Structures are given as structure tokens and as C-alpha cells.
Length: 56
Image (tube, rainbow, N blue to C red):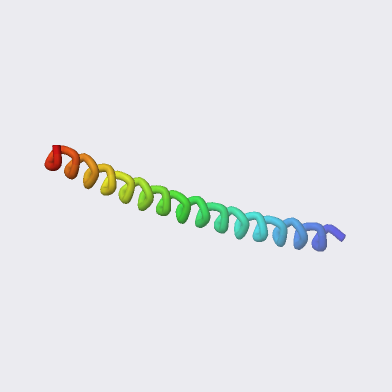
């Protein structure tokens, strides 16, 4: 009975580790997407400000 309990807890721990890895991966992907979005917003902003200063 003791060994079965230990086996279950280690299985649970492995599952928790896997879940944490997936969450970490999702966070990294989201952060990368946010950085890319921020970069494109900055590019658009620069283009607009460049256009305004040269047109006016």
C-alpha cells in the first residue's frame, strides 16, 4: 500500500511538472507576441510621425 501511494504521488509530481512547463511555454509565447506587437506599433507610430513632420 505504501509503495502504491508513493507511485501515485511521483506520477502526480511528473504531471505537475509537465503542466508547469506548458504554462511557462505559453507565457513565453505570449511575451514574444506582445514584444512583436509593441515593435510593430512603434514602427507604425514612427512612420506616422515621420509622415506628419514631412507633409506639414
